[in-house]
Structure formats: structure tokens, C-alpha cells
Image (cartoon, rainbow, N blue to C red; front, side):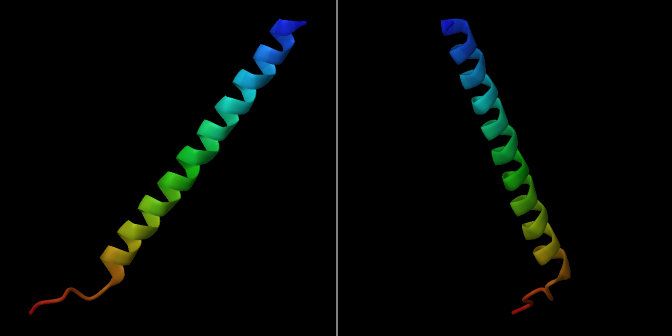
Length: 43
């Protein structure tokens, strides 16, 4: 029985890591698009 709880915990941690990576990638992508589509400050 303890193995079942350990496997569930590992699955939850893995899912949380994947979600965190997707959020981080989306934030980086949005920052790149903002940088690419914003007029440069040439002062």
C-alpha cells in the first residue's frame, strides 16, 4: 500500500513540474513577442 501513495505523489509532482514549465515557457514567449513588436527606444 505505501507504494501506491508514493507513485501518486510522484505523479502529482511530475504534473506540477510540467505545468510550471509550460507557464514559464509561455511567459518567456510573451516577453519575446513584446520585445519584438514594441518600437525600440532610440534615445
